[in-house]
Amino acid sequence: MQTSVSIHQACTLCGNPTSMWCSRCESAWYCCTEHLRSDWPRHRQECVSKSHQGVSSSSYPVNNRIATPPPAEVELITVTAIFFAPEADRWNTTEIHCRPPTRSHQGACPIPLLQNFFPDDDAEDIVLTQGLNSENLRFPLHLWYSPTAIQRNAPINRAVHNITGGSATKAWCGPVVVLKFSGSRLQGYTDAGPNDLPALSTYFLAYK
Image (cartoon, rainbow, N blue to C red; front, side, top):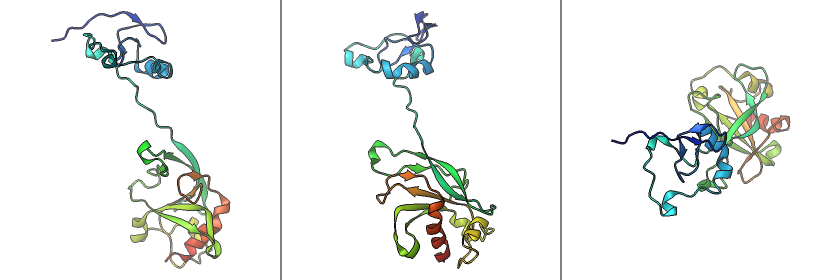
């Protein structure tokens, strides 16, 4: 059974007494995980694991170790999207957070986080590449909708109904979120806005 060892060292960041250290090099001391995370940009330059030093791991209790490197915090990408809320009379803009692709998927498009708009996780997507008069869109549009809302004849989306003047062949139901690609390669998003409404209206009118 491993017994507790009383260790009194100064935290590398704040100087307060601590008994915890970096689990990788076991030579830098921190009073909490947050201080290791804050100091990591500097400490990582000098942090060498015990195995690479050819030194056996410390006999100090495992509970005293702070995991290194600290968990990476994903920086989300935020873009402006067009939102057609089912109960609203007109479209609106909203901010959408997107998760960047992993290193193994470099070149892929960020993943929009749409759970707040589609709580049942039933969203499907369509990429619109053509606008008025079948002209190719320089910045294609990425439309997300709920197929189950359409299938179960949910209340008509008034915002979509109004943008088409009520002339659409088939009523559109449920929420609709529209993001705008930053180019034809579909590898990123840019802000959507009023200039994208004509292409959307054309699509809604042609939808069957």
